[in-house]
Length: 124
Image 1 (cartoon, rainbow, N blue to C red):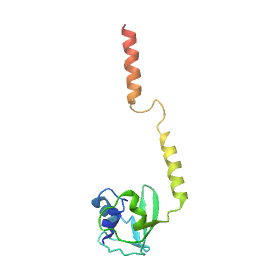
Image 2 (cartoon, one colour; image 1 turned 30 degrees about the vertical axis):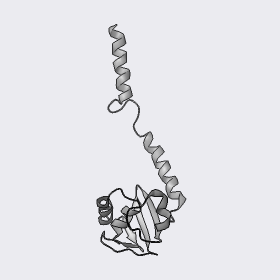
Image 3 (cartoon, one colour; image 1 turned 90 degrees about the horizontal axis):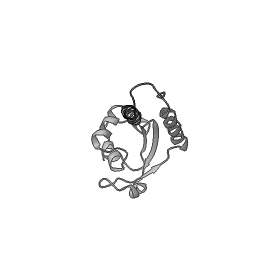
Image 4 (cartoon, one colour; image 1 turned 60 degrees about the horizontal axis):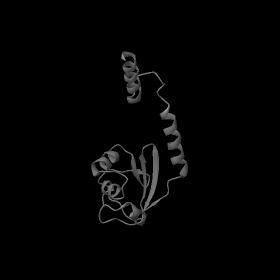
């Protein structure tokens, strides 16, 4: 099975074309070698995948016949991604939440409603 099809089947990418683009960008490695989208994968291959600033590490157990449900994923792959990767992503999310200073840039929807209600109160 092709690597792009495998990554789509085990639900790491929403479409095969997105999986293909990730392979072309060099974000997918099979046994520590950058993989082209058409590279064949076999059971016991080790995949390293960079997605959303997390490096996922997988071992292929079996090849699925088609795209599988989320509950059946563990039959076809073993996820050996370190827990520290997910912690780092959480910290990154918190740092991005407070990036925009209050009062700078365009008003948010809530700001706009507050402004509108302020002007409506003045007119009355």
